[in-house]
Length: 58
View 1 (cartoon, helix red, strand yellow):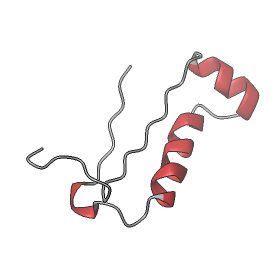
View 2: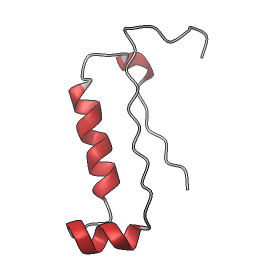
View 3: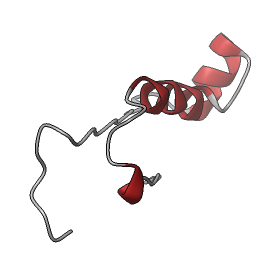
């Protein structure tokens, strides 16, 4: 990253604190966190398109 993060940038983060089996039982899908991240990114629609990306860390 060569530029500093300014007000034009948008960052979305979802941190799941429970194991995936919890979200499978409660919401019926292992993709609960990914769906929430997608929703957050949609709400920040026009912010930094040239640097858009997604990362998952276990």
